[in-house]
Length: 496
Image (cartoon, rainbow, N blue to C red; front, side, top):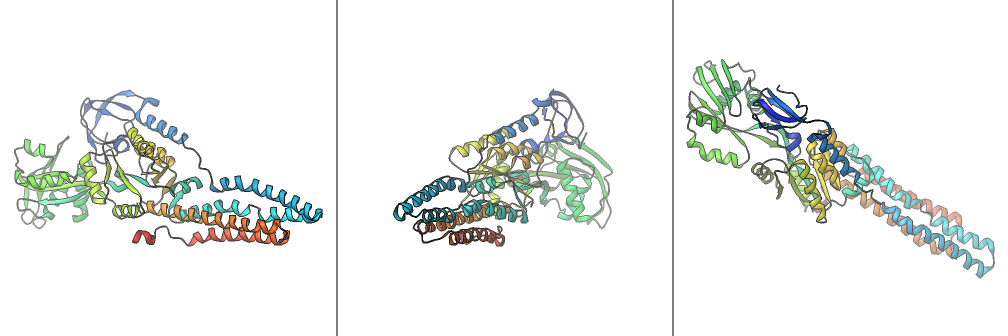
């Protein structure tokens, strides 16, 4: 029944439903089904009732296979080696060697055991890698905290470090670049009707409709006209549209309409009824080339309006993509949608690289292919169908409004349903890594400059201890300066 989830995979044996397969393909508009067509477990029936024969259950279903792929991709991830570990791995043995050498030289030159011990101790104290040990974790702690303040949840320091290296971002279309909800985008009145009259009539006709496109039209009419009367008669025509009989009193339309017959649906429906929209062919072609679904309405068998419905863009999508490009990051759009819709969306938001008609298992393969070219890839998505790709990418970024599976597979979760948080996360990562490098430099330079003085007896352990403490304080202070950083503010290089 409408609104229910399909429990397992199977084949339709009765009925003509419209199935929301966005969790599988990324396609926001429901897919019309007929007898003999396959259905997938966890997809949602949005229109009509049907019966189906189960063919796959349990671990054999498509959903179970997607989950398995996510687990495998997550298991293949290798932990990132910390910069401080690499430095300390070399620095500590060298310092111990220098301390031993200082002891031997001072003892051989002076013959004084206590003086030799003081020189060796001074070397060890001034070179104590406390600052090196603090350089990375303090910056990461402040950086992840700053991210949380701005709605950017980073699961661990390794993800923050990885985001700094990103040179390629793949964006899922449905629910990430677009809102994931069909909306009325265009209304072209015909035959003497005004736009207000056309949407009023269309909304009445679709009031009893369960189809998402019909619901979008009804919601638009209700938004503009408030409460709407019921149609006198209503017939759903599966896969084609609806037929209704409507009466409208004087005042609502310029002339009262008594029991007019209204058809609202696809080209095929209106052609079968012998209603000619040939004069509007240019308009229809233009809408379809933009990837929109054109609904035709006829009143008493005369063309009355063309209503275009599409999944609209998020308000900040174009700005976010422009910011990523300005940061030197290559942007791809990955979607299960048809090529025409995908290309239209890509043009609107300024993306040149489009990967369309890609199934969930192939999304992960596309990510792997780009990684094979030497790119450091971030995947941004929100649906179950994005989860394998999120796990396969160097770092996955999930929208907080997305599914639990997608969020689990990602290394970064954006609490804001705002794509500008993606470049913000990269800026935060870059700034944090900049602080880490500054910390390592100052920690290392303090120690490096202090060791010769300590070895030759110019520093006693007390002064060496003070210098070592000062280096640790400077590192912590530098890390805390991240608290004043605004990741949503563009860098000067981006503005230029």
